[in-house]
Image (cartoon, rainbow, N blue to C red; front, side, top):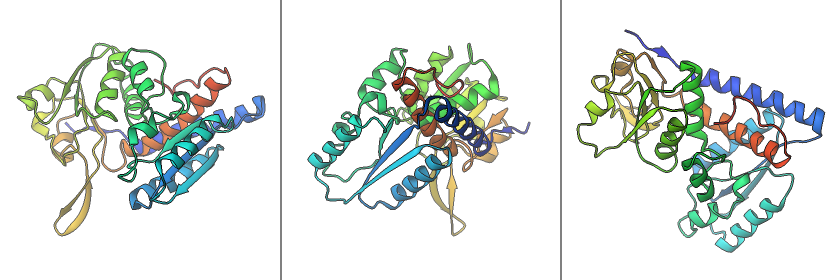
Length: 296
């Protein structure tokens, strides 16, 4: 068996095109332009790349992009004041504070100061609670992207056994909640799970989000299962730097029915879903119907 490759890059392009079409309709019919504000504190190289990519993608789909680049020594009071000003700005529908923040800043306090309706990362405690109780919320971008790809591949997910390996607040826990919302039977596993291989082999849907390179191998995958690899790990192999996931791709692809590659799988969906969340936030703020197919 050779697994079908779930092309996240192509799927993300499709999502961005849907977002752009909806943004154009909002401009024409309502005179509205969704706006995304991104706040970057300090000069972390990876964060700078992410913010640059987010800005380019935001402009590409016709949204307004507001960038706020602050020095690493920015005080907590100043950062909180900026967040509160963005909360009050009607042209800003989505607010994203790029993590990680410098060590002297309280990330939880900053994130929970964002207006939950503008929290397009889905990290505010109110959105976490709403998602956990099955209510309308802003959903974290990476799990939302995974859910979109699974729905596209399977159609309905009801009744499927899903195993999520990883229990982070950013991916593992919200991913499990989303799968429960689509009526999967869900198990959350992690690095300390007993008989992890046996737990994984029961999964029709196996989501790896544990942050360990190539931890999930082909002998842990049920034949025909769909494998979603959220991991992005930089390793050195044969003297060269290489990007790998949490799944050993070659062995898993020989067993699985479908699999996401790394790179080119889940990664591109994260920014696409950030744009989708900003569009959703704009529609909700203006009492308009939410975009179909772009929400949980």
